[in-house]
Length: 192
Image (cartoon, rainbow, N blue to C red):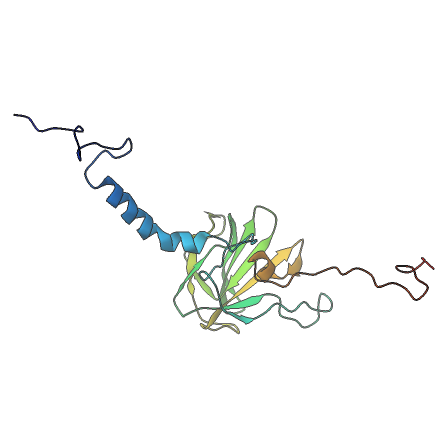
């Protein structure tokens, strides 16, 4: 007598399952992929994903300079362990990978025109290579003001530095408030 296949109670197969343990195998695959998905998924309202993993600790925030050559902190420092993976915050093409002033740097030109720079990062990618959000760019290296304790993330749009924390969904956004009524009873200049 032959063995029953796919009929009777307990032997019915759902449309997608083709082998014994198919659902279990798919679940295992999903669970294995979760760390990768977490690294690649941006925070709600963010355009970029954190290059150092979800929920990064910000050691130092962006401080816009008063003018192009003034002092400021032209990026954000995200806490990271020496040797930890550093990932692409968004899709793009590696613009530069190599040493700058004695520290290892990776820069990515993103498809929206934003240029991101990360340091210190010992690169595993090369200039001209296409990268995807969440793809490993390299490992946290030594050098610069972060020196193995953080990753400095910078962002430039049209040559001007912008707050990368806003792109990560962690920055302070400007809020426009309504104008206060003028003493003459109007709502601003020229109304009275």
